[in-house]
Image (cartoon, rainbow, N blue to C red; front, top):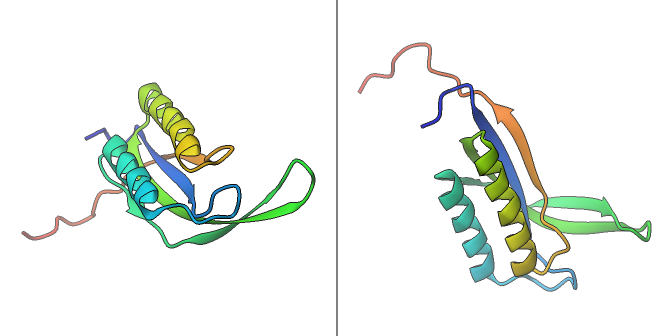
Length: 116
C-alpha cells in the first residue's frame, strides 16, 4: 500500500448513454468498472447522477453518469494509466471523451485502535 502522503482519488464519470442517446450495454459498463478496480486495486461505484455540459454549438446537454471512485498511488505512471483508460473507455462507450478527475488525498488513521 502507498504511504499516507502519496495517494490520489480518481473519479471516473461513466456515461449511461452513447452520443446518440442509446443506452450503453451493461456488459460494457461492467468491463469499465472492472478495469478501474484492477487499475487501482478496488473502487466504489456511486449512484447515477445528472451531468450537464455545454456543447460546441452552445446548447446545454444532459448526460446520466455513474461516478466511480478509486484511490491509487499518486504517481506519474498511475496517472498515465488512467489517461490511457479514459481513451479506451471513450472508444468502448462511443463517447468523444470520458471525464476523469484526480485529486490528492490523505488517509486518516483511527485515533484509537479498533479491537479485533
